[in-house]
Picture 1 (cartoon, helix red, strand yellow):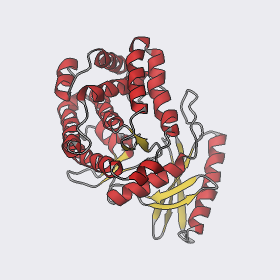
Picture 2: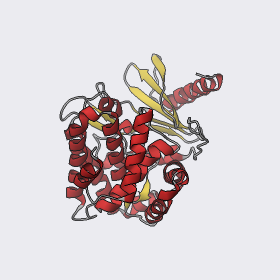
Picture 3: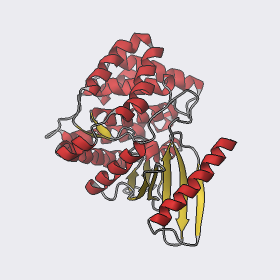
Picture 4: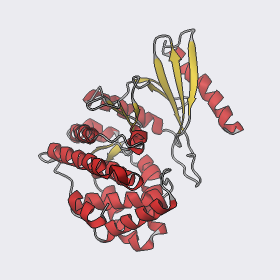
Length: 337
């Protein structure tokens, strides 16, 4: 940890304790533990004799090699989105405990004991296709509930953070570094910008899914700071592209990962078909291809690929953009993944 990071951590500690005192939740006995690994927030866990909380402060400049800046006010968006999502599926997101607007701090519940990072579970080979089924149902419920709620559509209309944290660092940078794919990527960005259908999580990723390591266990979906009204296809593609990356990283779990992806998409499509329509396969998998490409040539490359796996992912992504499949079955055949 650098001196600057240590100083920032000390500052957040005092702010966090102040926010909890103001909310009447801090008792004499407490512990404070910094959490490492995140690139977009400073994060602490505060434990008292009665409860445990996560304290987040959004960073104006993300901790990555390249310059990547975004409005720190996304903390307020996350708080509002969590409260809304909790109303639709209260067992699937943490509750919001406090929001300190002056210091740009969000306090939420800590996940129950036994919940773990789904990304790490997948990379360790613990792949349970039923998780895909339940995530498809959850995402569909959030998309459907928001699409029919004019207040939600108005409250989350701002796409600035989505542009800063997703469009520019993923789509724009991937296009700059792969000029042959740039026209296709530009069309996808234009269509996405003009589509305002439902609330979009914006980071529906395994690292933001906390799961109990057993079939049918509990799930939480966290990190709603990129939430906005937009194209629901993005959320579906975002999870699919992560599962494809896991297939590249863990080919020994290929069958289970494919089943997880298929369960996710089938469940989502079955729930949304009547009201929103099932995702258009070609459009969905074009987005998925761009996102795979961005994980090797964007500002946020995955942290678990070898050099050979990065080359494999790039080749797969570019092939998907040249010969976009219409569905997952065609994707598996086309790529031999």
